[in-house]
Amino acid sequence: MRKKTQLIHGGIFGDETTGAVSTPIYQVSTYKQDSVGNHKGFEYSRTGNPTRHALEELIKDVEGGKRGFAFGSGMAAITSVMILFNSGDHVVFTDDVYGGTYRVMTSVLNRLGIDSTFVDTSETENIQSAIQENTKAIFIETPTNPLLKITDIEKASNVARKHNLLTIVDNTFITPYFQNPLNLGADIVLHSATKYLGGHSDVVAGLVVVNDEQLGEDLHFIQNSTGAVLGPQDSWLLMRGIKTLGIRMEEHEQNTRKIVDFLEPHPNVDSVFYPGLPTHPGHHTAKKQATGFGAMVSFDVGSEAKTDEVLAKLRYFTLAESLGAVESLISVPAKMTHASIPRERRLELGITDGLIRISVGIEDVDDLLEDLSQALN
Ligand SMILES: *Cc1c(COP(=O)(O)O)cnc(C)c1O
Image (cartoon, rainbow, N blue to C red; front, top):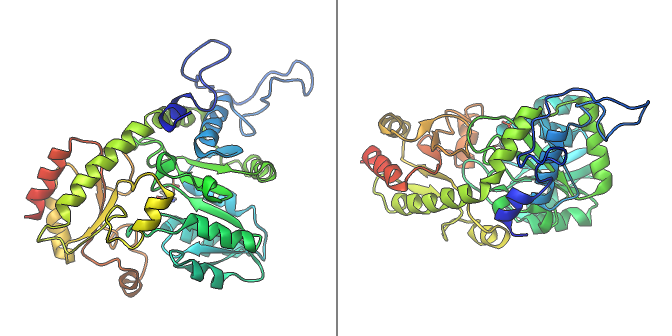
């Protein structure tokens, strides 16, 4: 089955009982048992719910894994995966991971004895040198926010396998339409489904797919024990979103290419960060491991004052956190997503005061180009 078909026909298509083409929202907490333990596969909705199950089967197929899981947010998904580990274990992370991932590792899970080291995983040697005796996994995010740095998933998982470590990939920015980490050797892939998978800025959710039965059992045990499950309404909304992921990503990316072509030579733009540009350091790897470059772009207008000017003039780019929705969104990493990082460290990472990040939506690209043009001139 090809990708766009799979997004629509993957998992459990429709409803067996009624023939409904769209999986119904099973707004239910518990299920009748004919005699003790004699039920139709569902006992209690924390353990399993038919609508959530349909979503979990769908994402499992779309990522090409053995078992899928839906959580109440991307962070709930990440936390649930990280507590597969024990006190005394250590995990190596990409240094510019999502801020929430950094926070949960360094302010919450560290208190429970799960340690982490953050390195630039775009150089595979750095992963190798960060491995300690108690290291249990490598957690990579690729592409990253906001500079779209790329880690070679295949090389990273080869290093992991040599040391008996799990490879975990946060695939939020590029989506399973363009990149399937499990096929590149990863063991666990996860998403903030709040972003492209939902796609309409209307649901907060997290998804995980594992490629091993035992890992699936272990993660289900954690999901059921800790209970950060996604509700049936949100599960349904996500399935509706995923059906159009293919056409949305095609449009997102086409718009992005045109916007990058416009920004690159613009006299008021100092630099543009997009993996689709041959000058981007991760271009070659991105091209090798994904079938698209995505729709996240960052560019530098030189100073904080100029970012303020541009933001004030833009009409179609909504100033907001988050990304991956049909509407174009804009943010200033130094003042928003990365504000908690000291300025010096930010500058070391390349996150300058004049850096603007856009999540290109699927509006008519000519409107987006006109809007950027009047704001930048
Ligand atoms: C948003 C995001 C998360 C966290 O997801 P939530 O749904 O907000 O909890 C994790 N990783 C990445 C890359 C994200 O963009």
